[in-house]
Image 1 (cartoon, one colour):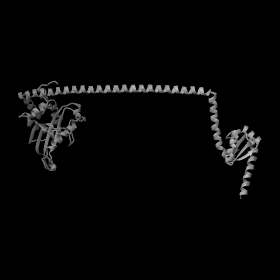
Image 2 (image 1 turned 30 degrees about the horizontal axis):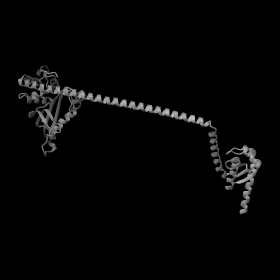
Image 3 (image 1 turned 45 degrees about the vertical axis):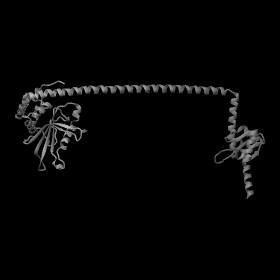
Image 4 (image 1 turned 180 degrees about the vertical axis):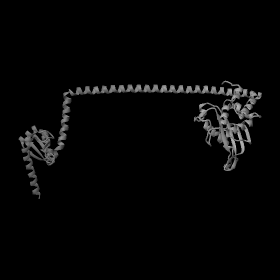
Length: 401
């Protein structure tokens, strides 16, 4: 932090501004000229307190220290009534981005602190003082490229105010271009030439330098701590990534082993199938089981048959005819020898007609397929049998009547 000479300070520098206020011969006169230029009117009755502190309602809440707190009795007319006014003037050339961003909230906070002290206990809100919080900055706090931001009447600022602001930013003899500014410049020169003020400036600078160094040290510490936190986070992320990579690698290995096992098991099944497929005993056993299953399914259909045509003990064929669904009788079951006898037995147990016709039974057994309609060459012979059975049924029904 480079130290500037006292002669180089401007009125926007905290030390010179507050030195002007604290100096017995300049304080009130300086503030009066400042307010008269800002508001373009006279200020006959002022009470000025420099470096006024406003503490919080308890030790846990933040307070504020105002550069200058000014009270004016009965100066503002509101609804025909004179209301006391309070002014807070704050020179500011803080260019830190965070401070500039928080500027509106800072102004609001100062206003609230003053409001809190403007009424006595039990006093009506209508007696609340008119408050003006004035910041004089060498930067644009809102970014709208304006010289003056205010609530109230609109319009261009006066030339005298423009000259005052320029002078406060560059306080020297050359910028004191009107009578009021020349008066202020004389006050500034008087303060800067005072030995006690020079001594206070040296002490103020040493304190400010110490605070600056402490801030730099804290900044370095914060930077180191932040860097260490980021290093730890990066290290943890690296470990997490490595762990995920290892897990993915393990999953890949497990998948490969599972694939190999599945391939091995598949090959073993193929080998076993090849071995069993070539074994005559196993092949015969499979065929026997297949025949038994087919025979069981076939025997379950026998009770549905209309007629069984048989060669007494060696051949049997069960037929069913449904004119509404089939174009010809369908073979439900057929068999030789023992199977033929079983077909006949099941048919008799379920009252299925049995007709003995040796040539027809053997011819149909050789030519007909299960679950298929009979060939056309058997239509006539089978039709005669079905007609005969239908007549038998009709005769029995008449006898019953």
